[in-house]
Length: 409
Ligand code: FAD
Image (tube, rainbow, N blue to C red; front, side, top):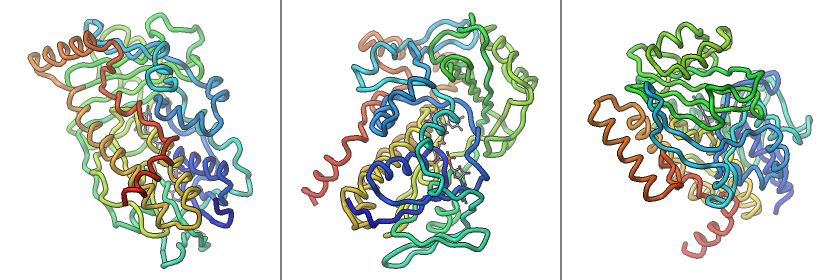
């Protein structure tokens, strides 16, 4: 471990906060720069699948996670119109045994508070909008809109989907609008559970659209993610206002359980955004600058892995820096070797999953639903969305793999 190493983190979202916490755990000095005036209540529900929970536990968050999380009993695939079950994968009773950790639903703001809870105030600068990054053979410097700059052994772009650090390193990428748009909303629950929302992650699948609902805030709210296809371009943003009427209008004819839930959304707190697709990058790092999270691998939300991948990245990067001491380029090579193949695969599989969820011809739907049944008959733990390989991964064992890679180099 090298206590002299200094890391500049650009962006204090989920990935930047996970990295800060992991660096702190390793005794590595860091400073975090966030463009917002404070850490805020941005976002909606996120699924913390077992692969992410293994990391959160390693970061010392086992007990706090229990307080804010909701443990879904199962993941259930449902027909949009009849409500018939297409698959049911047990989660609560099996995930710790099968994958080595629980499967939680949490609100993004709660997750973010957990990750930032122990970061000392003097290690964070708010209102710091990074505009450029430069690197030399020995260090890197981040430049900010107010004219200040910060030099460090490593600058990490954890600045999300529209990353300024990624643009500085690799130029502006042109994401493709996928023709999908997505609503998100949160319904507060006084009476728990709502009679028409089971205590599970529900995947309602219909022609050219799907809806995912699940409890967050320890069961005090239901998170809605509703995806549909559209010819109209919709902005890639988390804060574009929509309305209950617009949501209901897009899902006419859907099962009454879905409609009842949508009717309870707060019209002023219903948001929409366009889903854009990004190809996996061929490289993330130069010797003293790298990327993590959405800055490195923005992905479609169809496998619910954006936040999970950002958390894994942050943890692995801190482990690599600790493992390779002051040798930042070696640490970045190990980090990228561990993370880029996995995140690229998740990006590509999420793209493919969008196609399966939105089939519209009756014959394709029949074949898909039959395949769900056959898989579950073979293996009751088979995840309907085919994510077993994602949940099995254990980032907390990355140091063993660093050693293996070095032994074979
Ligand atoms: P962010 O959390 O977006 O953080 C980036 C931070 O950088 C922000 O705080 C921003 O203010 C700051 N910033 C930006 N630019 C600058 C700058 N120039 N200078 C300084 N600071 C800057 N993920 C899951 O794991 N599970 C789910 O169930 C899930 N569901 C989702 C559902 C939908 C519909 C969508 C769209 C996403 C979903 N995600 C989910 C994805 C997840 O929320 C993101 O992938 C995750 O937040 C990425 O973390 P990040 O740290 O890379 O980026």
